Image (cartoon, rainbow, N blue to C red; front, side, top):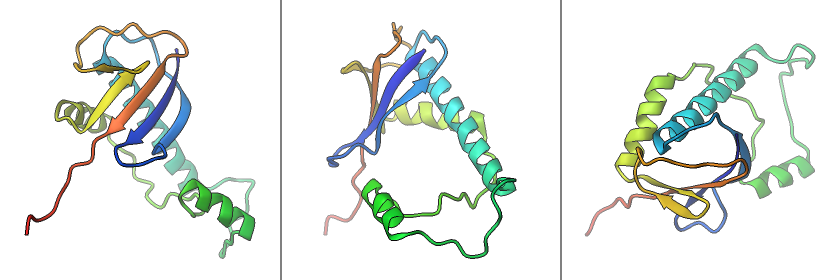
Length: 147
């Protein structure tokens, strides 16, 4: 199933992650949806880390990499200027990531909206269709001193 997903954060005008397409299996509840998304993202992160650690066989390794002025401007407009390398090749634990995501939802650290309707429970049945819009809103906890 194909979903259009975006991640927003309160207090920010632009979404943290703009709308992108996610491929997920058929799910019947929010718990299954979050689990499927986290498993997919962990697998993609581990694959990127492995690719970065091994390097591309066709791309020669350079000792000094530089970005052109146009590349810097393009990356700055996206919000991060970097070389696209992952320096941590450590594989992430999938089960810990799923457990953390579910606990974070239960603790109210983020909200999930399907087609602009909030889903408030992990076990409520979902009826998703191909092309539905999924929005995750991260809630930022305030920290600091009162004096």
